[in-house]
Length: 237
Length: 292
Ligand SMILES: Nc1ncnc2c1ncn2[C@@H]1O[C@H](COP(=O)(O)OP(=O)(O)O)[C@@H](O)[C@H]1O
Ligand SMILES: [Mg+2]
Image 1 (cartoon, rainbow over the protein chains, first blue to last red):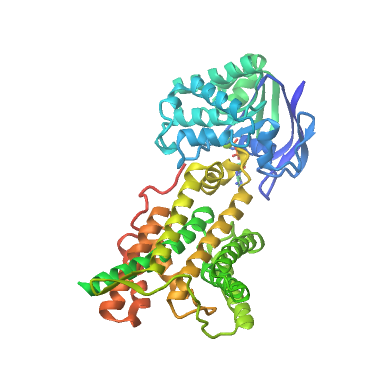
Image 2 (cartoon, each protein chain N blue to C red):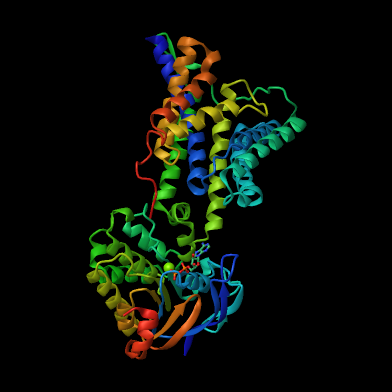
């Protein structure tokens, strides 16, 4: 079943469109990787999906419902969480406050408390630094915090923008392992934007390649991994 | 020594009001990066409401409540109707709009109430209790300290201990991320303006009876002193605003007492300049500015 369906999406910043006629789907419980070079339009794509940027054409539907006209702050209530590029933690707030913020809209306080324990279990490094301010964390810890905070909303779909950016290989592997774990155990669907092609294809079920704002290739992750010509042309390995 | 004691208590009492008013400036600055130059005029408007309510009912406290309430409403309306449109514009737009608002509010007040000074009463005596022949704290000074202390403590609790406070802080620091986390950032901005404006109204209510009286321009000098206090405190720091307010109150009281009351406005400006020259970020500014 397709959880997110993007059709004919066109978006930009006033000049020539940065994204043109983009189509793809994310099925429930799967990871879709969006690959592409710097400037290909990956961030623009995620921002258009969550409505931070209003698309000039096309539709985005989540769970069968058109997201046009849905206010950004209502997305989490529908089960869609967006971890923006650069992690977007609130540097002035503590780890605990950042996490609390993620579940603040929820009325089921007991479940929120249970989810908080679960997040701390998933990211022991955060549990050890609850009282630290966001700006005191390392890059890897910030990424953990951004992911953990998104999970506090119990999303069904997670949009993640380049979680590996600036992280050491070990931290990248950790992030990818957690995404895989969440998909396998909770059925979380992930729209994973990455330049780190190898790491992304290692967890993705499906992948699309974005080049100059258009879908240049799409298919099962394994097929993209094995397509030598495509890899050389777009993915650089 | 006696004179010094008198000037110190008087300075602290004025300083408490500056602290509250500076806190209101800081609240809005943190949330929107706008210095609300209209805050003085808005506070005066709220005090005129108090004046009318008290005149009609004979009750100081009904007027007091009306001023705080109308401060809340005025703040929310100003944010929704006017400031929302300059929040993301170049900073000068907000300054110009705020100054326009000052003129508008003062003109409206002038046309309704006239441009004379109206004496405003206080609920308790302003005569200082005499301690060993020195006239010190009056009952009204104690009321001022109590009211400002309650407001400062209340705001501190609100911001650090409640969900809505967490939402307001997050909205101020990272509006886009906050929206993605489900926070109604626009609503938090309105609430922030409402709270700040209510605090400003309270400060006006407390200080106007101790000066020349009620007049459309009655808060102009208080605004300058409080803005100085906010800048001394780093403009971003609520604690800095409170400490800055008390410090400015003391300095101006000493200047008025030992030099001349005529130079206090000048002294406030000299203090502002001195602070900006020595530490452009203010005395309480954290050295690292925000970069995520
Ligand atoms: N805020 C913006 N205003 C104008 N152009 C932008 C803005 N953000 C991105 N762009 C342009 O859009 C294109 C795609 O950018 P982006 O979506 O950030 O790519 P990616 O995330 O794949 O690196 C780039 O050419 C970039 O210069
Ligand atoms: Mg990007």
